[in-house]
Length: 305
Ligand code: CP
Image 1 (cartoon, helix red, strand yellow):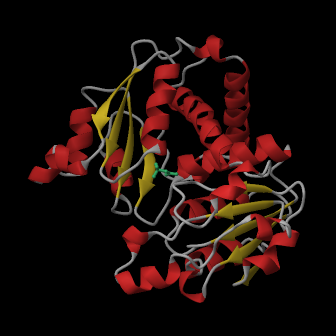
Image 2 (cartoon, protein in one colour):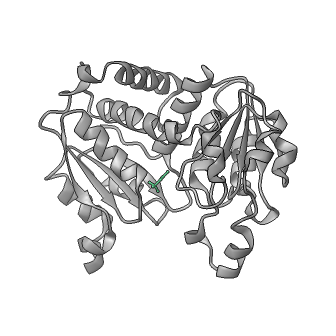
């Protein structure tokens, strides 16, 4: 039995197979409409979510399965002090697979160690968000036709943004991927990403503060919001929250074939006027998230058509 805690739990070849499966699901959805008949996914969300939880639920429903779960820790027995290891052993009596989001880093890993069903990390604190990364990789591959030979700009809260940490870790496995890390000094990527992931793999990267300086070089711009919920001090958040605002004027500096991704939710960092730009791909990205989660559920449950 396999779980997914990090995108690195799957080899590049396995990820390619999963993305091929997602592409086939996109083209032939009816072929997959009963793959999960009789199966259930439990969505165990101890932290707020719109996309991840509902896209897992949509993915399972699209496969013919059904959904149980909770969207709020306070409506679960966590409120009474139940541990994630006890909870997952209970959920294993009800469901075939579980997706867990938790504010504590490592909580889904602890659950997986006590589970008799596959556990999917749906985001743990500021650590990892592997299914967002699968979504991002699928989106980039679909839009650009490749995952190698790309210059990727990551902009915003690179310190607390778990999607950024997961995406960098996944992309360094492809050849000739360069990174431009765009953030204020206070929100730079953590040193373990710089040293243990980028430098350890001899990956070319630069850190810049001005988005305008980076834009002309990029094939992909990955915008992120400032993660209010991870700040200890409200004043720091207020100082940082509007540091970057991508608008139509700035988009004039970008290549014609650059795409903008964002894991969403958006706050102020992309002006809504940019949504009409054909390079704005963040809502298409959400749709790819459903296809790749369908492919992941099938892979973890070892189901085939
Ligand atoms: N991208 C993402 O994780 O969104 P949600 O927090 O809405 O799930």
